[in-house]
Length: 44
Image (cartoon, rainbow, N blue to C red):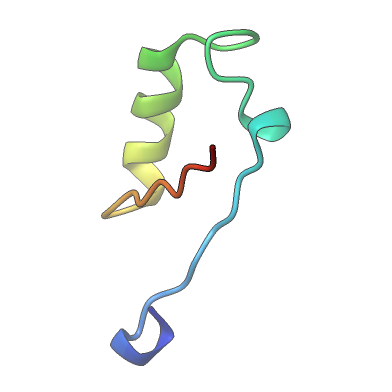
């Protein structure tokens, strides 16, 4: 990412509170103002 001139942001599940503290649509709306792309790395 840095080679392309970008920066990364890591948000842990506890920080986001997706579906718990905040609705999915609210989180998506806020993130859309901060980022151009979202990459999700999921674990089993």
